[in-house]
Length: 66
Image 1 (cartoon, rainbow, N blue to C red):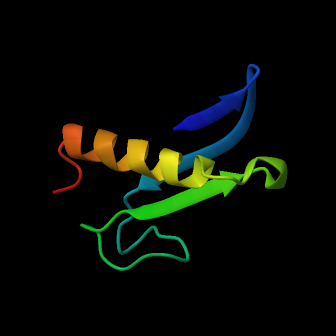
Image 2 (cartoon, rainbow, N blue to C red; image 1 turned 60 degrees about the vertical axis):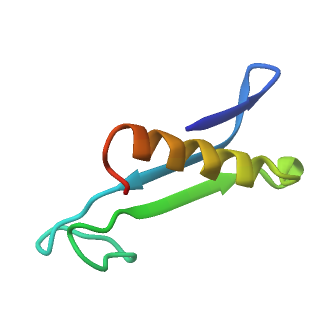
């Protein structure tokens, strides 16, 4: 998910599934996605919650999240 302000990206959130052989710092299990988020400091006023809410909605819709 990308958040924009006046057509410019100001934040993003994503999830990614890793494997036991290919993983990052947040790896717990192959069935548990790692979630990432980044928001420009000037726009941290609730955008984070909105991004995560949309990410979780999309993950549920696509069957990646219970």
